[in-house]
Image (cartoon, rainbow, N blue to C red; front, side):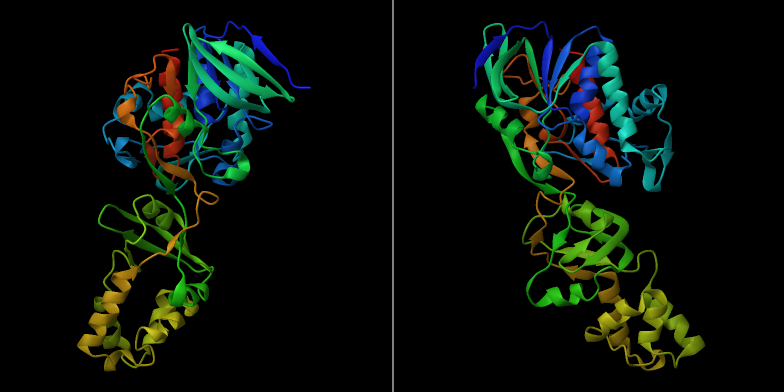
Length: 404
């Protein structure tokens, strides 16, 4: 039988969402002598932390700065990142037993390669600091009342209302619905009249359909170091061909800057000039077939896939100037028009979210609703791939804790 119980508490704040932002907020509030209640719909906190980086958790990036974040207001995150820096993140985790090791491009992972160690830092601290975490708890609604907020929840089939002077929305974005992701943060923002910047999957693989799809499918599994760019951004990392299109770090990165209907461009041999390489090779070995030469640079499979686009059966010495120009154009400016993306099921994060115009950049409190805060992924601040989004989550959690 379901009953509604009004439960009065002495919590300084209720934090909705037990992910990276919510857990950091609870811990930092505890350090300040404040008591919080974290409400988490999953059966344990930190679900997304646990699967990040293949279960290893790339928890920050040594080169993180506001320049690696996408937002309608590019300056909004500066205040938050000045209050909680990468050095603060590193020191925090080192203090509680997690040493970092750098992988590629500044990505920092625990030496143990265990994401569960990161979550344990927070659950242990919450226990020590008297911060409560209620798992398997669904939040039905948030209501503004004279002295704060009433939060209607459901636990063990029973509905009840918990109350607090302040509420923190750290419920994440839309990616990975099977892990419990919902639009709760966005719905709550709209409920209180806050604007939402357009949302879309970000850091997500891109799909190719139609007549071009079989060409990509034949290359499934091939990975190539490339430069990928459009009119907005450029990234140099690996791309991965798949049976449905393109993935890999460089593709995930550019996806955050791509819109349906637009092209992306791929330099398949960055930092080298294929025309110059061919000219040099033809002096030494003009009889070598173009196919064999390309196979020495790429995989044989990739070289063969280019057979319908390039004169691969000709030897290098017989290539005309126009043919070499065509080779150069294809290799250095491979043009792709994705059909779409793989959606929120495969996206690392959500682009867009609660408009930064609605929030104080210093505290992340809603300007129109005193006592209501938004942090982490539900805010229109989206980082690059490589630990940047965790840095935003830790930093926003810290900043909010200072004001609750």
